[in-house]
Image 1: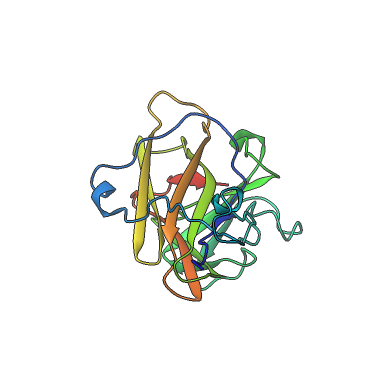
Image 2: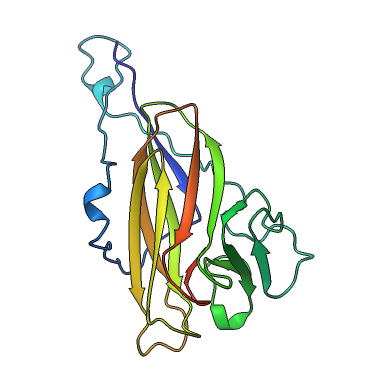
Amino acid sequence: MARARRYIIISLLATTCSVLTTSPWIAPSIASKVVHSTHSSKPGNAAANKSKVAYHNLIINGEFDYDPERKGHIQVEKGGNQIYAWAVTSGNVEIVEGPEWSVQFGKKCIDLNGTGPGLIAQKIATEPGATYKVNFWLAGNVLGPPPVKSMFVRAAGQTGAWSIDCTGKNHPVWSPITWEFQAEEPSTTIEFGSTTPGTCGNLID
């Protein structure tokens, strides 16, 4: 009997909005693809031969709102522990909150740029061969240059990248992003990183 592969959501709580385009410089390296699989309880049972899909969220603190005692904008350096369940593994990032950000969920979001590009990561348990779907909201910090903000998501040696043009915008415009990867190990580190110079990068929620 063939073992079913599963789609498992790794979600920063996405719903529906406009779709962004993938950065052309990295699109050819996106290795993940949709995996259709079947699981049959009895040979010849056509009804049972449909794809089995399991959905559950493996990300902790995807809204970045845990620890309500921390208020305002907080810059988190590499190795800092101010973002519960997340590690800053390169550069620095900023926790931002306030009505001007119009965050999608809760009161806070993450700017992937502090004084420069940063990277946050979280390790999750995975099943080798299973396909995982990463959902998150993405916007650009419009308070400073450059006008085009770019970032990437990386897991299991696979990478997706996106950019947002903030020209003419005076507030963040949020869009949902969905990306998939296939796990190779019993645990996988999900990374969200900036490729934008300066202090104003992409926002994630």
